[in-house]
Image (cartoon, rainbow over all chains, first blue to last red; front, side, top):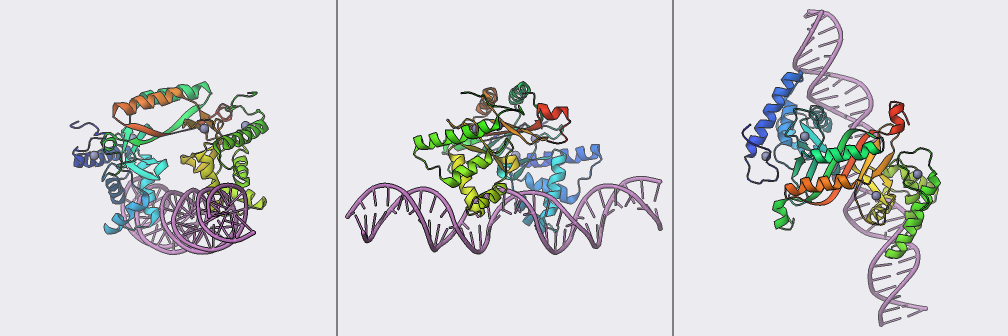
Length: 165
Length: 165
DNA sequence: TACATTATGTTATACTATAACAACCGTTTT
DNA sequence: AAAACGGTTGTTATAGTATAACATAATGTA
Ligand SMILES: [Zn+2]
Ligand SMILES: [Zn+2]
Ligand SMILES: [Zn+2]
Ligand SMILES: [Zn+2]
């Protein structure tokens, strides 16, 4: 692996993020006997165009430009598939979708969402999960899915007061 | 205080939950010089009618029955006020609202949401918050709001397989 | 090829939330 | 009391998000 997750580092090689995400998806789909159709691959690529979560309707124009049908069900179906495969996550508090950098195994860690630049970074926080599991366990609650969405300011935006991107 | 938070205990005196929530809201509004108008109080009462988060549109019929205007802005305005005062929380993953049992100070702990009975219980998990703060801090991220929503099965529903309420 | 399965196209609609402006009401100022 | 003000509510319209339902096309399998 030639590059770690970029986190909030602004100057990483994002082309690499995109290519790696697409290649990982292709491999996993082959292994899982799932079909990464042109629409699905395009939607995945669009979601990965940056690290800002995108709304479903923001993807439609690009689908139209690529010659596909661009009615809502098209993009929602693709997003549903990509979520099932773990390639993208939905950010409930934003009604938006973001690419997952580690779709190999299902997981549901948390997101740090910057209100300055809108970037969302996936948090691989075992400690958060453990604390959650302990607290839930004390109430006899059995966890199935976790959604952790934290809004705040990333290092870059703290310096500029979070006023812009 | 005559009763602790009921958590997932099915047989608690829920009338007490409601009365206490309303009385706390009245006191806090008086202290804060905010107006708990009839509409706002009714919406708070409706949200507290049980421990299942309710959608905004589910509240409208009851508003109409009470003789108020029942267009969406009415209920959204009331919910906005109640959220600002900390009397209710919004559950982003459900697009629904639930009463807060501890509105004295602002907070944003997490929720355990049972997919069997749809009850949501507020988790006062200092450990989760600490873990989150630590993990975010390592990335230089400054937390402003936390949303933790955990879906699973409560003790009651684990026994019945979560098939119903 | 014939058949079943999955994916996509297409139209319509449901669900969630807010914009914009008018009317009302309680309080303060003149 | 009258006027001015700020906050709340009434009302209409619209924006934004997501899914239902059914037709058609593509793909995999026997
Ligand atoms: Zn990148
Ligand atoms: Zn992920
Ligand atoms: Zn109760
Ligand atoms: Zn609360």
